[in-house]
Length: 306
Image (cartoon, rainbow, N blue to C red; front, top):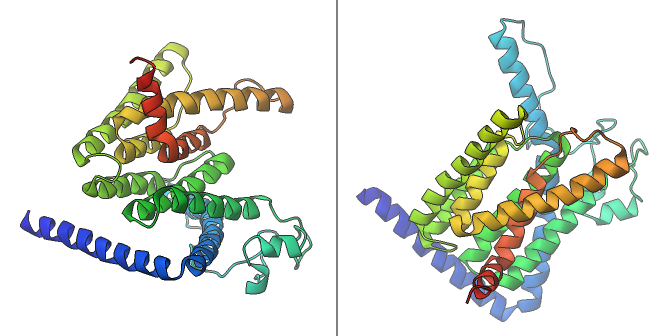
């Protein structure tokens, strides 16, 4: 217990020291600091694209290996890939991409949306993720200033961007992202940045159990699976970050947004009404709204009953 207390004190003191150093640097060089932060955010956006593309491939390879092992099948060779190896390559022809063709947003514009090696179209996802990362990171800088809250908010934003795009494309939410986000939220609230630590712990448990119980009842009534386990874990992560008071807003707003977008998509695409649609991106949008405007929305709602 004493060791844990000393670790928490060290973490808080180092955080305050780092925060003080950053504040002094920004006061002395405000313009340079903002430009550096923008470039850093673009570089992070490029990294997020790597995670969005490679993490599902890594998960698929791991699942395949586990299944073949369970069935006593001969392991089959597969392309070794992780977040760091091999170096950036074209997803179409697998040719290595030189670094000057990998500059966030700018390279996409210069190449006019086509790969230099095979002249295939580059997915719009790449500049979109980079632009989102830049815009949301600058918004967090403006909202929270240079602080511990900004540091953790950036982690929250970047994780949700990755989760949203992976779920949108593959209809999965990796445990490494949702559970990792939950642990980081609990760590942030050791300093009570968003809520108290006991509230965060109980809200994480309550968030998971509430969706799990609701989906069990839904399955008993309809015989259909309305939501995946990844959504439960992501909802629990929101509880760990913001506390239970914001969970009803996140659930209701994401459900309404998902229903509207889903109806429009099914009508315009001609898909069947039972076509599964990922719910994670809508949870992520509601989570981001809560990060920036959660207090304002809560106070507005309370004022309606005063």
